[in-house]
Structure formats: C-alpha cells, structure tokens
Length: 396
Image 1 (cartoon, rainbow, N blue to C red):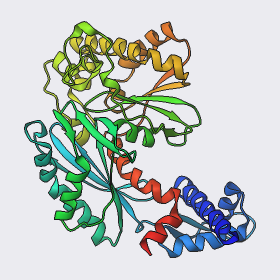
Image 2 (cartoon, helix red, strand yellow; image 1 turned 180 degrees about the horizontal axis):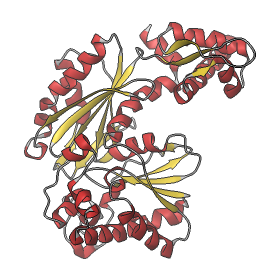
Image 3 (tube, one colour; image 1 turned 90 degrees about the horizontal axis):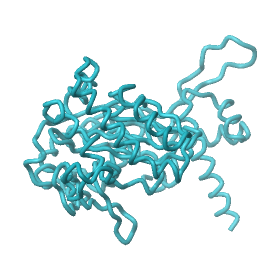
Image 4 (cartoon, rainbow, N blue to C red; image 1 turned 180 degrees about the vertical axis):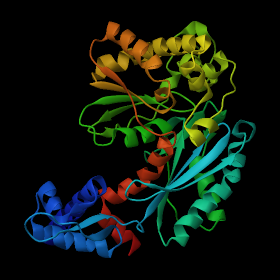
C-alpha cells in the first residue's frame, strides 16, 4: 500500500514538473522547485528521470550576472515524442508534427476536392501526407505518440465514451467510422499501433488559443463551419463536441446542408459569407498565406461584405444569447476565420450581445489558421504531459 501511495505521489510530481517545463521553458530547477512547491532535491531527482527518458532536455548553464552559482536550464526535449495533427477541408487535407514544446516541426498539405469523394477516398488520398509526416518523425528519431483528427463534425459517443462522427455537413458525410479509416491508412504505411483520436476543430483550436487562461470563456471560431467551446480554467469543456453552427437562429433563411432550417451556418458560415460576395468557398488562401478572400473584400470596403458581416454578427449574437445567459462567461473570444474579420464583426456582435446581456467582453483571438491542426496534434501529447509515468511504462 505504501509503495502504491509513493508511486502515486511520484506520478503526480512528474506530471506537475513536466507541465511546468512545457509551459515555462527554458526554466531552472530552482525556479521549478518554487513553482511546484517541492524541495530542490526532489526536483533534481525527478528531472533526472525525465531527462534520462527523453522528455526533458538540459540546455546547460544560463548566462549568470548575479550572486550565487550559475544554474542550468531545462526545456522539453526537441527529440522527444511528437504528436501528429490531421484535418480534412473542402479543398485539401493537411497535417503537422508537433513536439512537446507545442512547436510545429513539419507541415504537409495535399490539394483535393474532398466534397466530390467518399470518406474512404479522402482518407486514402491523404496517405502521402501521413507518410511524409511519419517519415519526418522517424528519421529524426522521434516516437509518434498518436494522431489527432480534427473535423467540423457533429459527434456522438459510443458505449465507451469515444467520439463518433455522426455527420460532417460541409462534406456530406454521415455516420463515418473515421477512426478506423485513418488507422487503416496508418497500417498501410507501416505505422502500426498508433493511437487515433477524434475531436472537433473548434475545441482543438480553443485549447491552443485559450490554454492557461484564468477566466471563463466562450470561444467561437472555426474555419469551414462555426463552432463554439466553453473554456474553464484554460481547458475546453469535455462536452464541447457539438456544432454551434447548426443552432437554428432564423428559420426563414432556408435549409441547411445538415437538414435543419435557419441554422447559424446560413448567416455566419464560410460558404454562406463567400456566396454573399460572389467568391468561391476555399480554405487554401487562409492556410497558405493567412489571408481569406472574403476578409480581404471586407477590409477593402466592399459593401456586400460589410452587409454580410453585420448579418453574421447579429446571428452570432442571437445564437450566443442562451449560452451567455446560462454560463456567464467573462469573455467571448472570436477565433479562426471569424478573427480575420476583426472589428467589423466584433463591434456589431458586442453591441447586440450588450443589449441582451451586459456582461461579457468580446475580443479577437490571436490564433493562426492552422491552430486547430496544432491542437489536434497536441491532444495526443497532452496525455503524456498529464501522465509521464504512464507513458514511460508503456514505452519501456
């Protein structure tokens, strides 16, 4: 019993220290002892274990300008385990490799019209992307901890609580076993026994954008579709797997691809807003250059774009009315494609929200176009950070 208790404490302390290293690097052992509330001896011993097992790297002695002995700094090991993120868009599939520092080490993309293909054909077409990502990791001598798949999907759960893709309205997918399809492609390239996890694009992006925030937030973003996630304590709520874009707000606006009428997507979704200005729906410009045709038109003073943005702001405010009233967040964060619209969206949205609930601030997020992809990859590494001892036991 005492041994089990001791192992439990050791496991908790290893997780605490690895989390601090990932969040605060480069950092000295003395600083870690203060942050963790542990003795210097305990930190030294546990850090040695993390270093020996390839999770933390000793950077050597920092420049020393004050009294006392020089101290060495530590950081996540750049050759430690990595996670792979993968996503499907209307005109491409993309992936990335992320290390324990949260840094993207490699990006890959393949153009394809995914709406004209079956789910199996799309995933099969992504095989070159997956192979290049795995080749990059393995030639660097890194273990791939797993792959996170980000989708703008409506999810359900199986008996074990695992996410299931009920539909991806923007792609016309219904009841697709994405996990099995991806696992099959991994097996085809020789990547056996790799964990595959699914998640919503918006919760993945919210995890990267809002990690460490002390206030309660509602993150509203997405690329292909509008989504929302409640963030408490810097962590997206586990239940945030629905598609906010399919909340009905204006029943007379027509029928949505999901089968319902008047969904938020028909006012604030990428396809609807692109159509309002006569632009084709595309994801590539934003991912490749950070720019989006609709946002460019808006910032150049296009009246149709301005009108569509105002309508989107009103629809977003109406969809947010109930969550804001019930949850009382301090801030609503606009991320993803919506962030690119800037104050042209934020100001009318904040004004209409204030009429209903004079509470939350509305701010523009700072995430990149590939934030959801980065979050998908990090979702795999988060398990290692939360339980490094479990990871070491599995890989030893």
